[in-house]
Image 1 (tube, rainbow, N blue to C red):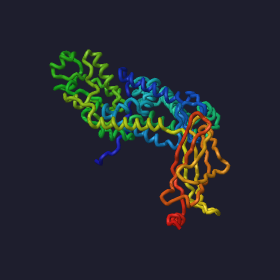
Image 2 (tube, helix red, strand yellow; image 1 turned 135 degrees about the horizontal axis):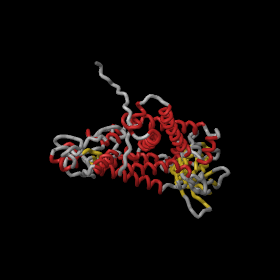
Image 3 (cartoon, one colour; image 1 turned 30 degrees about the horizontal axis):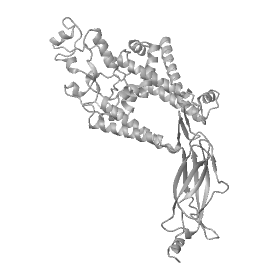
Image 4 (cartoon, one colour; image 1 turned 180 degrees about the horizontal axis):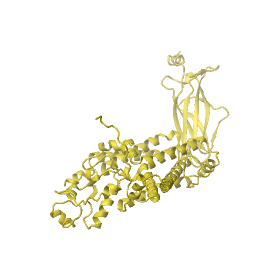
Length: 476
């Protein structure tokens, strides 16, 4: 018989549970949804710019994040954020396993809501299983149809909310519903809506099991001291394994004397698992450390007056009775890297200049010899005013003697708030005033007429044809 390389998906119907970790997950979910859906509508007063707290303005090539304005040239900050996210993920995983997956991942958060909708419409686990296995009736069509309709509604709201981050939310939403929004707005909304609907409603645990790479490489960050959701096999199984409560096996002490495990094999821990695994089989890559099985087991243990903690957050060393060392060399290395990256990013943001000058020498041609014998170089200058107020600037040259700076009709440059200007500067001087070792100089820009002074220095080179430099250096 040929080997079967494909297994059809076994649909999972997670059962609801109440407990400490379910409450934590619900609190994080409500916070995440509140931030995601309400943040585009939060107003923020600025002297210049949109009155939206968080707005990603692609046309203006700037991102508004409360009082911080991020420009295109600040894109390296994104690299810093990605590094912080990576090191934070590694650090937390080294300490506490896949808690990010179980509590903070978008896939987990949105799937939780979709399962809640499914439970609200179709009932608890047994009712959903019965409905799924039944023939198609009017009741089944209505319940399944209502579930998918609500899923699509949440998915569309998800896509729409994401789109609102890229424009002024009150105006953009009117444009979307009146058919006047750009094509990109509709495309983004529909794409996010469909991916949310498919991933959170249809694929669910398959995203974590088969699509997400994190499930595969997490083992690299795990060690014997890492916190995992673990089943206490010694207590749960003892010598004779699991048995349901019976005469003489009703208390934990009686089961201990009979060498029977405290696990009564109720299956509640399996029924609440969103990925459908049995945690009693040991650590598995499908486990997202959501800890719902801990809540389920503790609830059963409490109801039958057994000690809780049969399933708990623990480590391999702790289960073996050994000392657990949380901050080992690996985790300390992650922590140092994370802290260093945060400090560098904060320092970069805090010390960013509100004035930026970019100078590029025009190379076609590099220089021109004028009729009076002087040499002229031309430079493209771009001035960025990153502040929320207009400024007037003056440019001068340092480092060269007897030099002439010609900017045409511009003796002073006025730059509006959060705007930039471009101009061409011509620099002229006699070859007699330049030596081969002294062709470097600085463009210096200063703000004028303002209490807040700004100054930027940009290094550059003045090009003199070689034959003219040789003539001067030889003293001829």
